[in-house]
Amino acid sequence: MTTESISPGTLHAWSICLQASEEARRRGDRRYGTDHLLLALLEDPSIEVVLGVNLPQARRALASLDHEALGTLGLASGTDAPELPMRAVPKKPRIRDVMKKDRLRMAPAAKKVLEQAVKPNRHKLQVTSQQVLAQILALQPPDPAAVLLGALGVNTSEVRRQLDTVTPDS
Amino acid sequence: MLTHWVCQSILTAMDIENLGVNLSSDDPAIGLRASLALHRLAERVEASHVASARYKGWSWQQIGDALRVTRQSVHTKYNKE
Image (tube, rainbow over all chains, first blue to last red; front, side, top):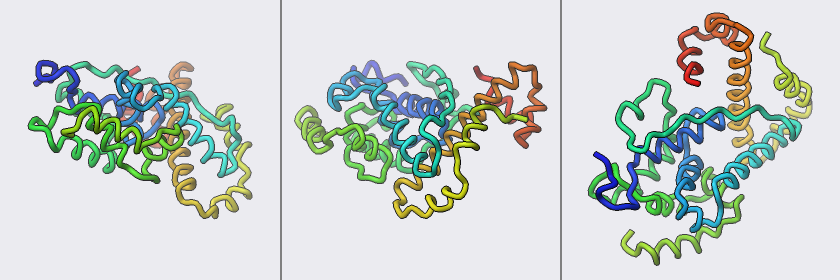
């Protein structure tokens, strides 16, 4: 059931889902979307290097996008409430971890990203961060992940080119 | 009863008349993000005040009544931490 024995860079798709759902919980979202998947991927140092941004920067960018949007409604820029605590994500998630009663649901766009990412794999629950990132980079605004990458100033076509040279088969 | 400085600051910061004008802003990308951002903010305000209510000795039943949900739902949602 675990993936460590197969390839060092391979993750269990559930780990990414759980990490993304904790990022969503932290912000107060009820569903996790492509932007949360991107935050989950930034736990992987190699993704930080490829994108040239780190997790705190991406979290701050999301918060400032929110503040900007709330500003258009006339809410003062200092209006905020503390972020919610994240729960620990197990290294080797089991079915009981993903089927908790109070779990957050996945947004349809995030589901599609993961489905496309695991498509070439024989084991559909195993995926690499790079495969998921490649799918996220293909998204266009107004998708939340594409908006976030735009706000972070990431050159998506350049990163895709880099990913293609590293993993020509994906 | 759950009004707190955060809620109060939101209420006073929001100019209701301007809100109507701003809602007619024609960029759906901003408008839809603002709507979700309000949901997120509400969720965080709720969590913060549930914690504060528990600290002040409120029962799950009282919190549930204030939020118009059952005590079980509040307990399931917030009793983890």
